Image (cartoon, rainbow, N blue to C red; front, side, top):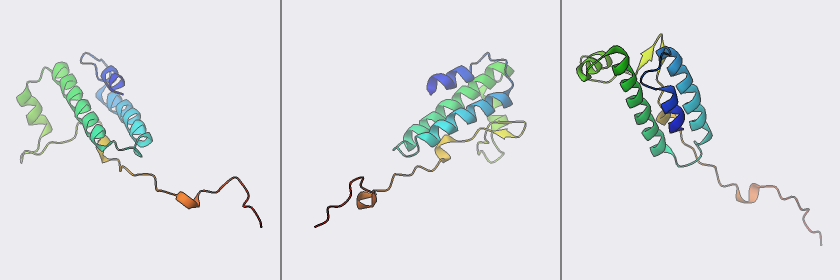
Length: 118
């Protein structure tokens, strides 16, 4: 998954940011929905961090921004970080996906063998 993200967010990529966000959201959210039944919340947050930093590096290289430019453009006046977005498409957090566990079904699983009659 990390290799796919690195491929999509190369610093010198000429793709529009909206296209990068659409592709990233499709790939990582599909992957996260598949693995949401595992104990993967920490991995999801690490993946979010990786994606955020890769996109910030892409924007810094593309627009020749310094770190203060990034902070000025991606924070509110109160200091809260805004999600990276382009043309109404936001960077969605993978860690926002609800992690659920399979329920123990025990005796409710149907048996393929007919019960013995006495």
